[in-house]
Image (cartoon, rainbow, N blue to C red; front, side, top):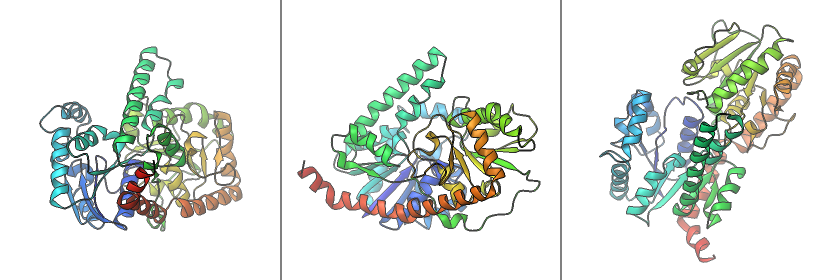
Length: 414
């Protein structure tokens, strides 16, 4: 099958979970189909010539949509550009025309939308022009849950109203695209059950997991110079005061870290990820390093004593857990942080949902290295079994077989 994979998020080296999902999706799809890749972002965001060469190893062709190539680097101008795109000459209609022309000239059988849950206007424009073309809406989460789960943590009534409205609008979109698209993917069974419950035809919902390529983590890099030990590590994509990662980081800083330091006074906290140095620029306390985006998180992650997943609201499954497991680093997570993954408390990681227990779990793992090692090994074995590119390849093959053969049978049996 000839597949056109397109996404507004694509970058190498991957800067975080969104980029990891896209990269590993491409790797899996390249094993089972004739793959072409169109980035709906600029060359600078992709990573330049080296990144283009990297992605060409997996796709027969790598190119850019004309509108994506014009993306601004400045985040404020980019926001304005996104608003303008829906009505301007380089908006969803232009992208739809480009992708359909691309598909026609190459006899493409299916357009696979990486991060389809933020691409619905474009998917809709394509399906309006060509109802018969096969489309996969590949989701990284249930976006309405991502939005609405913030409500219990917000006290401002105006912002609560904004969150409610935004989440409700996303719920409407989700109900539309599960019936519009030939396949909607979910990163876990938890997400898949949500989509099946709102779909007219549940057979169109398929699992396409978040996974990692274990070979990437086979050789641990050297530790950064002057790495402070013992240390805990938190990584993700930050950006604004209300984001899940910013809320999580502030929770650790204000409630968890002080408790842990009563037992381990010299405990160091590393915060790594895009925009963390901007959104947490006010953090100046000793024993905390806010690093922002780094060329690779692995020098910090591989040498951390504990990796933290202190999320209070989110959706999808966490690359933070998968990467830490691949690096044999023990993990403390909230229940929500581990949602959708086949992990068990005290078998693969420690789960804690309040500050006192979270701090106690950190202390336990640093003091009890035997327990830390056992959990890390168990979690890595789990990732190798269920969350590798090999497993994603199997899921990709089933989805393409459904599109090629099973979809018509499923429709006729209804």
